[in-house]
Structure formats: structure tokens, C-alpha cells
Length: 282
Ligand code: PAF
Image (cartoon, rainbow, N blue to C red; front, side, top):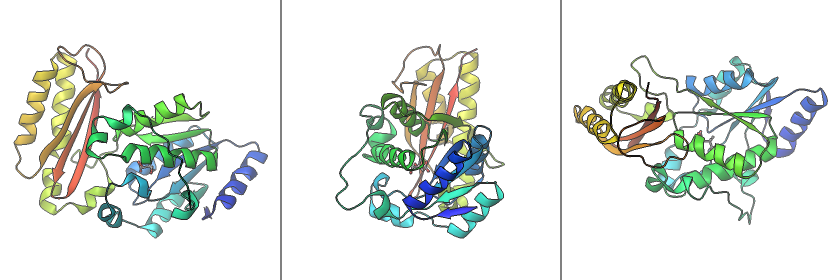
């Protein structure tokens, strides 16, 4: 596995693959890898000859410096996982490579980035769109994979690619879960044991919603049932509950008749966990 710590090095590596007529897939990550990231690698490997992963803790998507400083950095373990998963190369730039002195250009999906979870974390999705555009421009892949767990991020990337005519196929990858149903996340390792046990409530609440939507329900009944399920445990506080159109993320009301994204965020101590489902009425 090639380790490329500079832009010229990854560009030269991709050029060598292109010279052999190979296709290239990209898995952007911020490290602290787990089985969810490996699922992204496997998804890309089904669509491209070679998979390139990136590890870059992107400062512009963190609201405050303390959260950025606390982000886990596990480089050796990450590289071992990527190598075992068959990744061809890993691009690990420095902050100055991605944001050179004087950089002022940003990329923003102006509506999608500033609704729902984007209101709780102002600037977050602008940081994501900007860094992903840069990674796309540096690597120039044919396909790239993003997890469905951060459903708003996935929709932001899809919209950005469409609006900016970026010739890259975006693969959505279903969320990988722990045995009890908790969506895998680098943040899970920072939960206290009691909060970790209680965190299963997110997926339990979403399991209930999926069945309710399939058999017919309204937005307000669904919201009531999710709130009631989350309230059965006392450790986590429901911070966000959005029941929205699965493409535009616009709020919906009344009976649910079309595919609907249900996104929840629950705060445990200083850790905010998110999870989602897209539910389709029968
Ligand atoms: O989902 C993530 O890990 C990050 O938001 C991403 C897409 C790698 C951009 O920094």
C-alpha cells in the first residue's frame, strides 16, 4: 500500500494507475477507522480497479477547537485496517497542503448545508463540501463512497457533484452497526460505559419508525413515538428530530406517503450521536 503524504505524490500515483488504464475509487475519511469505513472501501472496490483512501482531520468542519483537538488520531491502526482491506494507496496531507496560506475559496450548498443538523453545527457542511471538492480535485477519482449514517452529508455531496458538474459517481453505503444496533462511529469510543449502553436507544427508536411508516402513519404520530422511545432512558437528550423528504430534506407533514428520511441526534454528555433511516410506505 502506497502512503502519499503530499499532493504531487498522490497525483503521480494516480497518473501511474491511469497510464495502465485502471479506474480509481476514493474513500475520504478523517481516520479513527472502524468497520463502517471498511464497508465504504468494499463498496468502492466493487466499482473501481483501485481504491484510494484519504485520512485528513478537516479543521474547517469543526465548530470549536476543543472538538477538533479531541478528535481521535489512530494512524497506525488505520493504516493496518486499510492495508488489510486491500486499499492501494492512502493520501494523508497536512493542513497547509489542503488550506495553503491565503486560501479563501469555499464550496457551499447554500440551502442543504444550512438546515437541520447544519443549524446545530453552523459551517459544518460548508467545511465538508470544501474539503471533499479539494480531495476530488487532487485525486480525480471515478467513484467515491459516503455513508448513509450522515444522511445530510450524503445529500450535500450529491447536490454539490450535480450542481458543479463533477464527473464522479457517488455511492451511498448503508450504515454498519454494532451487535446491539448502535451505528458505528468514531465518537462511540468516547462514550462512558453507561452512555454506550444507553446509546442503543437511537437505533431502537428508528426500528419502530420503519415499521410504522411501512404500515401507514403520520408525521406527528411518528414524532410522538420517537420522542416517547428516546424518553424511556434518562441518559441521552433528544437534540434533533427531523422527518423530511428523502431527497430535498424539506420538512413534510400529514400522512407519510413517500420515501421519508428520519434523522435523529441524541446528546450523551458532550458527545452528540446521530442516526437515520429512510423509510418507505408499502
Ligand atoms: O464523513 C467524514 O468522515 C468527513 O465528513 C469527510 C467526508 C471525510 C470530510 O472530511
